[in-house]
Length: 173
Image (cartoon, rainbow, N blue to C red; front, top):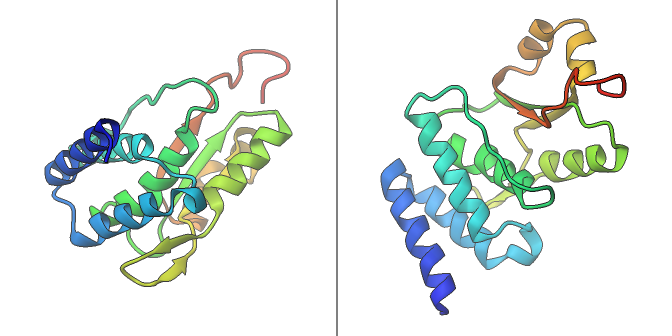
């Protein structure tokens, strides 16, 4: 193993210990990294997901996750929501996480839907599972028919807000 891989593995192990992760999360991380060409998830995204999970577990309700465009934020959120949060007991079966975006670019919005709403493999269950993430445009969230109904209908446990240009100009959502 390279020094680079050893660094990420040590960081992941440390964070797993800090979050008091069940064995199923350890197993899913190993499987995800061993199949990163299939999953599209890499060590840095898992580290970021674990750090966010620790913060949520500590009771922080407002966080900012800032990184450059196309840097792996979506993969981090995908791993956080589908693997980390269920493993630490933050989200129960049949609950969901709403990913709200003000992104107007159709290609990038479609990419978010493809990445975040795709099924995932849970190695501990030995089966594909439906993603807990529901992607919605900000303007749809506020008009469909109201945010409270969306949260109730989808049994939303957490709202993740993407792209912070909502209301910043004529072209924004």
